[in-house]
Length: 221
Image: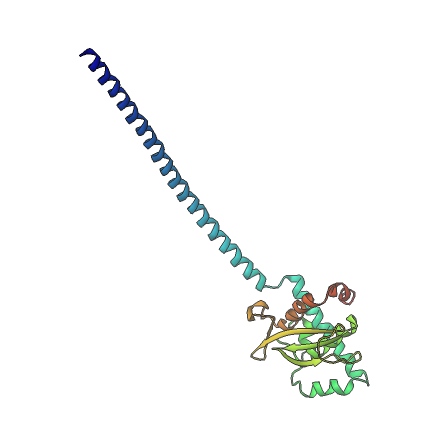
């Protein structure tokens, strides 16, 4: 009888021990699960916060990119001035005078005052022609201007080459909307500040001509 009672006590002890072990395991798993849920929830809040901040930062960057830096706007204005100067020189050169006069006949507005004052509202054919010829002269390479995938004009200050791609030719590719706004890929990648043609021209030069800024630098002072 005593032996049976003793066995029952041992069995009960092991039963309680097993139950206790399972209880501890359950508690550990429960705590771990809740802790993981809390951490995941916290991480989600942090990720949402970071994503929101990232979107705000990207939006700010996009806005800033639409606003030309002061140095870039100054470069565009100086390039417009140099283009005007080149066009005036072309008018006085008997070799190219006829081409330049034809542009004046087809260009009803005068932009000289606005260029000199830095208040250009849009570009003229004369400034476009002057810019292409000026860049051709200082880079010593023929330049083709291509707008909306259509050839528009070539520089005339060096020996003309074939309009097709060659190592001696710079093809500057721009786009235009409504015959007024120039850009590279999307209308909003250049600001509508009156100098969009020159902003697009600068961007295209950056992509196609290495160190062109260093070459032009001495003409900017």
